[in-house]
Length: 551
Image (tube, rainbow, N blue to C red; front, top):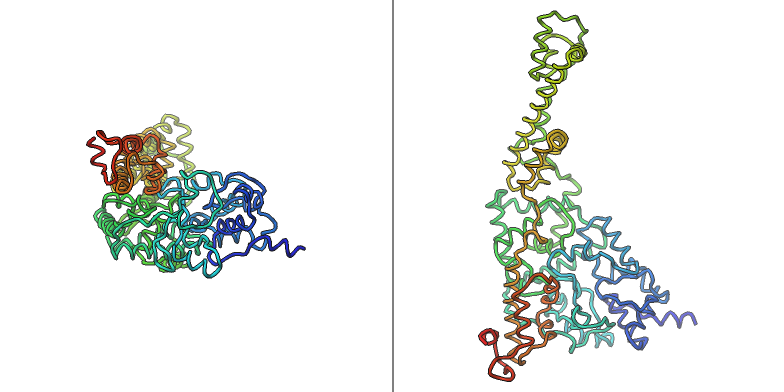
């Protein structure tokens, strides 16, 4: 009886996703609807998602032969693809979220909401794989290797993958489903050069390789940064070198924009400069893995070559905090100033009674702010004698203190200003990291001056909403929408349906969620979905966006 119950849960197929086995289970159970299957699987009928499979800790006990929740995450979901460039702490937190009853802010913490690649991961299938699966196991199912973001080509058959119209943001309710030809979008009609095809294939291999690596361990952020900088050193370290590297990168990826989710890739060498700087600056989280893989496949050809260099640095080199050869470290300069102006007086001398002329000379030089240790050297006395003398002359002590602080301000201000001139492109945070001791001293003793200088430095933010040219994005999206509408009007009439447009241009949905942006695109979308050409009751097939605008 127990064995019969265990057989209620199906077994894994090769390269199968968790969503796929649940969908096959849905068919096997002959459930009335998707909610019934969700209740059987997790004990709840709440809405689910197909990409980040959560609530795994509540899986039906009849599915124990599927493996532990962690093995399901590592071997049957796309989650490990996002782990490699995260900290161990973030990976553990992500796995805990996938075990629990809600995702929370997981997509934000993994960098999906801030990197323009999109947080939606449509189901994808290869027509040839579907045919082979039906012959081999009797049913077509969702392959894990197809579902990773950025995988556009089947790694087995070399065919372009087709996206499903089901379980999309605009398609209605969630469903447990298996791939069917009628649910798949046609392959985009794009003229692909041999060079772009090779880039896409290299990215597919890199994505799958990175996913395997993410199941084992994570990269060291400092080592990643060091590998990038070492590889890019061939272009030079000055601004001209950065621009040359960015131009070469742009030529490498210029054909990717026609494919999802690479439509956000740089469209000019200037945008490539910003893209590149975001990867080679100080290590930070919330960077989409596809950004890293774009750079890795360009510089190293494969993830394996990158991992080899990364491990060499981790095993034999700790990224140094020293500055480039030929430049004097500002921190060392502070130490030199302190050691030269306040050199420790090691020779022990006994306190003595001072003659009036010597006492007067010492008091004069103290009032001018001269170092105590230099006075000890010049007059052969101890620090104790000078301290007693200053206590007996409060006015001199106050003058010495004010003069000393003034001198120190001048020295540290000079160091700060010289460093800002040397590293003119650095943000306030980067300058602060170069001069931690100077920054702390100025913050405590000269805060007003420091604050005024910090306001004049770059804020260091690249991306998010600080440097986004929304007008430019609007024009790019409008151009894509016009092209899509032209293709649809070859076989449809005005007004077009929004669902038709969303099917043909999936990124339009996520873009329009930014309600304050894309004014031109919204107006044109409204026009082609509600209006018809003047002079006729409807537009005939074969119309164009130019005709729409002229009307």
